[in-house]
Length: 154
Image 1 (cartoon, rainbow, N blue to C red):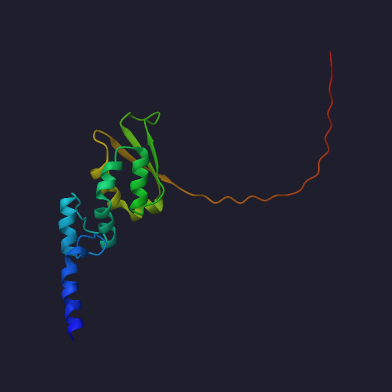
Image 2: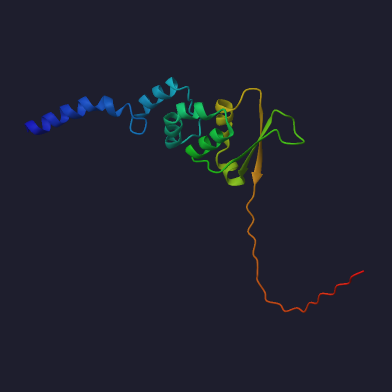
């Protein structure tokens, strides 16, 4: 009986420490941490994605200024592979092209909009371009041919 009592006391004392971890805290505490890190939850965002965005807020803010950083942000948030091109010939100098697959674009449209608003470069316009994977089948066939080499000299 005394053991159970002290275990409850220990759990009560450890509870504040578990609330500091973004992965295990309650939703109310998560909202406070998100406010502190300037992250707003959009209406259709699942809780696991909101936790990821809050968890990596500082790192994402640091990485936001470079092409490699944008790619790392997309990877951390589970969007996947992205190609980033700046100063594309034939387009205005301030356009940054993000190439994504059509699945990524359709499944993460709200998240992409929020990411561009929060981590996009100032005075830049972003354009989404779709990458489509196409399967190619190649058959190898043996064929015989004759050849001859004729040369002429002056």
